[in-house]
Image 1: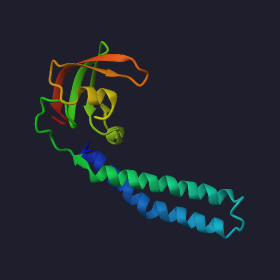
Image 2: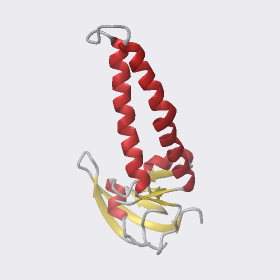
Image 3: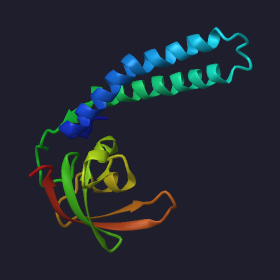
Image 4: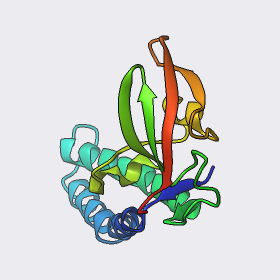
Length: 157
């Protein structure tokens, strides 16, 4: 699946990957080696903590590589009148008006907008919708929620 990211989010995630693969992993390896020199590994809390951190770091590196490999960076959607990744949607959701970006939540920390993934219940319900379209989605708790798309615009427009 392709993931839409802002340029800022892509650069931030790329920098995180570089740090994790370089100094982050090197620091953990040094801590593991230092803990090994202390002797008995069965009861060595520092060793086990460092190994756990190494595993979490490796998982995050894999996640970032997969995300960045398939990322669409800041490209304006071909048809900005249709809800698609990279568009800002204004919608009536369960009676409340919301404006949000349809894209990756990985990039949300630097935005003033809420971000919904196209794989989320709301995102998948409105994906492909045009202004005036009414859709429904099911929340994780099983509740049916009505959505009406009020406006669609490319991000940054």
